[in-house]
Amino acid sequence: MRGLMMDYPLNLSVFLARAEKLFPAREVVTRTSDGVHRTTYADIARRTRQLASALERHGVAPGERVASFAWNTFRHLELYFAVPCSGRVLHTLNIRLFPDQIVYIVNHAEDQVIFVDDSLVPVLQTMKDHFATVKLYVVMGDGPLPETSLAPVVRYEDFLAQGDPDYDWPALDENEAAMMCYTSGTTGNPKGVLYTHRALFLHSLTQAAADVCGLSERDTVLPVVPMFHANSWGFPFTSTLVGAKQVFPGPFMTPQAVLDLLQQEKVTVAAGVPTIWIGAAPLIAQGSYDLSSIRDIYVGGSAVPASLLEAYDRLGLRIVQAWGMTETTPIGSVSRVKSSLADLPADQVLRTRAKQGLPSLVVEARVANEVGEEVAWDGVTMGELQVRGPWVISGYYNDARSPASFQDGWFRTGDVAVIDAEGYIQLVDRTKDLVKSGGEWISTVELENALMAYPKVLEAAVIAVPHARWQERPLACVVLKPGETATRDEVLDFLRPRFANWWLPDDVVFVPAIPKTSVGKFDKKVLRGEFQAYTLPEHGAHASTPDAD
Ligand code: ADP
Image (cartoon, rainbow, N blue to C red; front, top):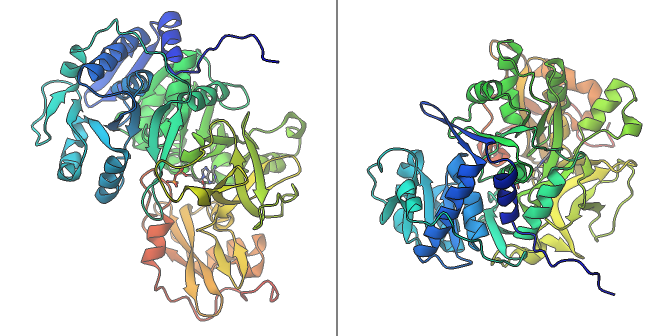
């Protein structure tokens, strides 16, 4: 029997309409080169309608892709709503991809228009001759249009002024595509993820829930996650839905600039990859920032070392770890401590927080073995993490590689994980990062977490290096804190009591910095390339098989 409820499509336009009606004066703040720009949901909503109407007048057809090549700003937020709510698809281009990858994804997505920040015009110009479908460039920023070879080109404000502020949002099916984002393509070409209105709508409702990010209109939200990285982890949509104040750092993403903004705007919720918070910790420790307004910092994208959680605890700031992927919109799990575990000894609570967490509301997770059978939730049996849920992809956009990413209706994450008896997911490694030593696996994530707990170490990445006898052995690449010195042996001695002998890295190299990916994660692919021919010492720190342990 069918129920009797309204057919009410889950469209993103509902979010903006609510913010406009209920929180018209709530601020949206953007850092600029000479201060901050302040606007409100009332203005954003009006300008968003104008922008949508201008797109229509320019003949951008429903369903066509409109791209952004931009930092986090209020104009980018306007695009976040104007493009999808008018029935088009916003393709957020990752500005840090290699030029040939950007050309590939612009052409693969068949982008019709590119909205580009002033500061990024010089980068985009170098690629423009290779774009097959782009018919218009719209340059975002203040003042006159900068000199550019992009053509045809128009200033954002002039473009917007051509639109009608009383434009009505069209009725859309909730399963229409709203946003598009390509994975950063660590192997092969990037793959396109096409989010529906429905997925983003449900993801936002969940993100606002207490056991996920608990966002409300009382919050001031600053994600230090680019708006081209998995929709800035959903924060711009969810913040608009609840009517929270939003703060955008523009191109000013350094730890110092972010800390200034966190303090000045009294931010309550921040988010970002571990590297930004590793960089910010010493600055916060100097004690010159008042960050007492912050209640939660959501950190994910790569493993959060327990030492980072502890360092922030000491600073009076709470980090909450989350796991996700571009393919999962992105929130898959959040590491909150169950009430039944909260009174355990502090080290056990910390260990729970250092796991990737419980599947978020409405996401199902399992760990599967090679033949696709779920393994026990015993905290030790490893397998591939697989997920399903209303905001998990069902395939990549126009991509023959899609079928390989699914098994019996589950999305294969490519992450190796265990699940414990309480249901907490713990990531062992990415499949491609694991060290396969003599047929056994060594988790680079665990070694890195331990290395980063050594007080002299700022950052550490462990990579597999080819080995004649064991196929691969781990090499630790370590960045010391400024002014520190250390030897290979003291670092290995620190690890020795924490790991089986055969897990110990064969060598430790001290490097000035770990290369970072386009979204600020350790770039182990680049490191592996650099150390591919590295000659490991004849006798590593250990015997190299489990048997010899
Ligand atoms: P990229 O492939 O460029 O890193 P994504 O942001 O989609 O793009 O990355 C998703 C991957 O990031 C996950 O598959 C996982 O390997 C890693 N990841 C995300 N969050 C965490 C976390 N909390 N701990 C460990 N790894 C994480």
